Length: 344
Image (cartoon, rainbow, N blue to C red; front, side, top):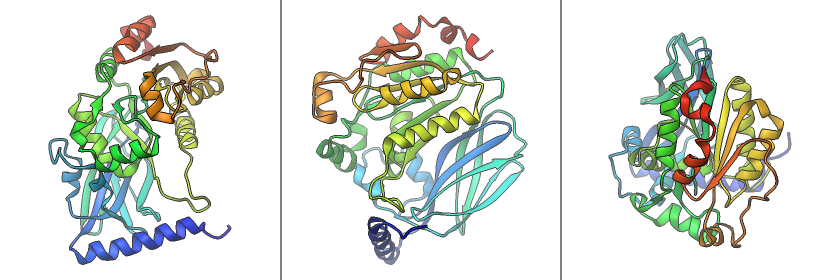
């Protein structure tokens, strides 16, 4: 293996210094537990070990600190090489947090039935619980949704706007995309037990903020699959597109019988990523739904008024509209989604 990228060295040095400063100020080790998923056969549990002023419960409580500015989500120092114990049902596993403080483990033989459960996570004296949706092997439908400009309006990835929305703007002033939560609730009501997965290139640091936002605006509970904005061992930037491709392929492998509704927007690369996945895994895609940004939103998103959707014919049914209500009208054509027969 080659030497670590200089950017990774710099990031590690910064985190070490930040950890020293925060430790002197009385910050303590906390476990940030993220929503995960699984089945009666396995469970994926994710989280992060950090130095933080807040209790882990405070960080994810949707009714707590609704006026926090985004920058406060980043005021935590990752703790690497920490021994973490994860327990779910009859299964238990130990893992060591990585250089970003993250852990991502799969437990088998947990002995639990489908439905929502909580994994217990321990790191020294720090404890937390992670909500885990275990999906029945009988389920045949699920939803994968982008977040930025699909659920909430952030105008990513334009650097200045993104920085303002992420670091400065008070989180409860962010605008919701009309009709999206109602769309998801309706589809899941017609397909009980189906999974909801939020797949985004957003930073894991913002997971507590996003959880509060989604719950406050009535979005269904679901697993979060975010990414780390930091440098990798080999490069200064991570690939957001590759993150989405990798997670979609993993979901297809883990749930080969589920056909997913893939929801995103045309301000970034969702149309191309989803079309590519549908072409490679036609048995795992039920439909694609793309929220169309306005000209102004397109300009804020990537600097041109033109959609990132290349307009090529999709290998599966594709709905396009300005919000959740418009997408619902088109998806209603797929009667199997609205009658609950898609998972029978």
